[in-house]
Image (cartoon, rainbow, N blue to C red):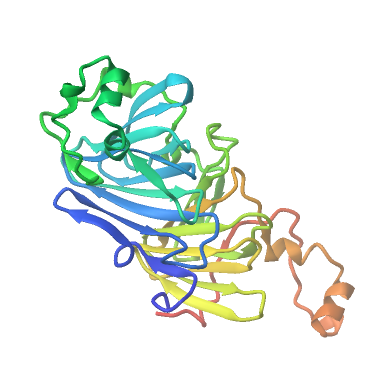
Length: 346
């Protein structure tokens, strides 16, 4: 089950690194979920008027999906590239490693953001901490001001999430198109089946991506993500809605089967076989992050068409005429019908 699996953690009950009346930050890294390799995940909650203070990642690009609320993102990247834009539910934003940025809740309800980072032990600096590291003389020279102008700085520690002082203002330019913004849920699903669909935030659709991508995967109660593996891609999933059962095969032959609930995050290392099955009548919605800009995929269904029946017979130790009649599958379907439910967990 999820509470004991090495593959699973919960962003609702684990990894809280900050919490106040302004919001909270929970994260799973390889320090809290040791199986993580090259990826980590955060859940950021901002109360109305709250600001995630300006900061930059030291060792990781980042992509984030807004689950609820409306956030304003402001960013300064390399070569003085400024950008400010609004992100609403179902939209995503990208932050390059080293670019300084902040996010601010400009709506009337809590904002919830799920962010994946391209490091299993991400590190960051805050603007406050970096300013505190310099003397008043150095700051004065930098800004062409007397050193005394910085006497007001009390050199306190970073708060991570702070409250805005004054009314919320959204610049007119925030509504303009931006390469760091991607409306994944407005996308016509490139992968659509009778049992579910996947919308894809990957490099062919979002040019800003370099070493990350994300699938917004919805599967209905009569569907199932077929058993598969990703040849060169690790998978870090987040359960936005619904329940599911997952099974993962490890190289030592051990099996890990667990139930996923809302708020859970799971990790599957590169090339580990796994599958996802719906539990319940409402289906599920997963945000699945990958450590490649275009994730690869090999499915069980097409695998059965890749070899002769004689080769399969010898491998399985079953007479050829007793083998199941595997359907010829030149292109794997990603999602298949869930007509057999005898092994389902309630």
